[in-house]
Length: 180
Image 1 (spheres, rainbow, N blue to C red):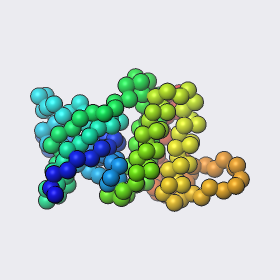
Image 2: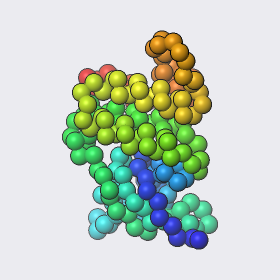
Image 3: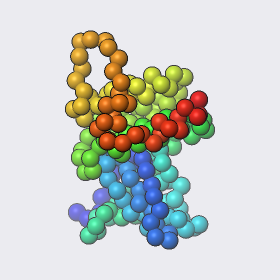
């Protein structure tokens, strides 16, 4: 089956050639995948508004020789309240950076997909964003097998653990203090 549909959340995008983009999507069925979106940088492209970061969409893809190619896309949820607030969007990009850095490509993880969706919805509504991010980081580490739930209620430094796993400093952590 060369053509298929999948649900996913856009976590990253980058320009490719003159009119194309490479879009990183976290899907329910396949985990993190990279997709080639041909012609979406053209002014007349109908697909380009749907493949913005943090959009939850249904993607129609065609599996070619290399990476899948985007044929159609329909937005399910765009998180408009999240995108109106600079501080909230900064935290949302932090979440996307963690998913992109810690999750392997083509590894199915419905639990992480559900966690990502829940966290983006919480970031849209809740006031205490640092607690939402800490809960997300802790749960992501647990789901990936890097942290076990212990009986002690000791608060751990999730950022230090994540930076050690990634072997680099988090880019969004340099920007977030400026948004507060």
